[in-house]
Length: 424
Ligand code: NAD
Image (cartoon, rainbow, N blue to C red; front, side, top):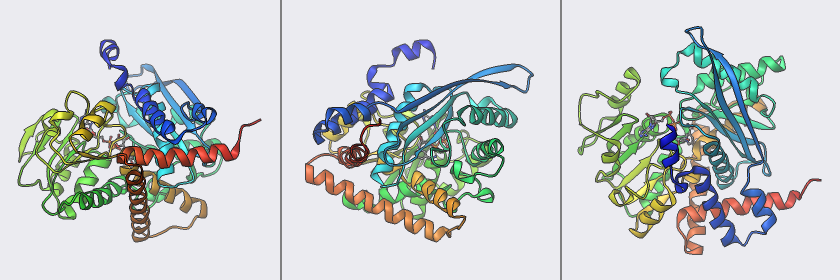
């Protein structure tokens, strides 16, 4: 983001302001005691690092990265690491806070954390990315660890990034520590089903929410924004379940076919070319046009603030399932709710990723591995039960699903905080 763009960013689009606004509303409704409220609306630990990397040109460039732990009352901190030019401390704080609530919604024994490095991986070579990852890991090694804080992949990071992080941390220790990160390749202690977990979890949620909305998934039209680890997998699984995925997009724009896209073919093209641009069939369209497509289900699976006051009225879906973190601003949330659009919140809809990360960590700790069928069955059970619990809470209190999920999550974290008390 340029300086001008940053100064134009309204308060309501600062992710940490949004995360706090969402928390405050839940805390108010729960009547949380002011001390606990103060603890939970702040992050626990924030590490900023500036570190040098030698680029292929020979030039040394200093990068800035962050690791933020929001809360560890319920267990070690857990959360991904993002590489993106627009990473900021406030973004990482918000993502860390959302991780705390997400782990609580699906009852994993974790707190929340997040990390990020300001960089543009699209312009960096594999060697440069390896150097950046290894040095960033060394810098944050003082606060991560299998019982302290366990990173994972997120936007523009993947299994290879996690392998470099695991190797770097292990070199520091002098022995292999697979439990320090999740999302690793299977060959070094990664889990079956992890690659697909977030998108698969989202697809399970779409199935349930569509059923509740009286929709037949077989005739439902689905639109997915963001064709990365989460969006492409969600599109693939929904396509396999019989849904008609009519539109998908990435950062450059999207492709639309009202008769339904051949998602296998789109994925193959995307893998071969690293982008959707140039996909030979269907109609090309911008991300703004994609979000306004006629459809039953819209799945934002890219970045924050994609649905905002300026475009919420154009959304034609009946159901929005937030696969991305923080894709809907509070203004858009209100506008969608007023029009009767059901929004399934991120802290529930994309919790499949951290759930299978937890399975990976448990398997690594026991050095005993499960089959993919076992993983997927356990994932489905947790996603289904969590959706039902959120829905029941929302119905009981007469609130939307986001507030229902926050009430459940904040209550659980507050209970853990209160039980532990204040140190010293
Ligand atoms: P990714 O890097 O694999 O893919 C991101 C996709 O979004 C790419 O296709 C990219 O081109 C596209 N994109 C980026 N900016 C865009 C824009 N402005 N408009 C449209 N598309 C855009 O990332 P990912 O891992 O799939 O993560 C996507 C979202 O899901 C993020 O919000 C992330 O925090 C969240 N999430 C990821 C996981 C996970 O397991 N990876 C788990 C939970 C939540």
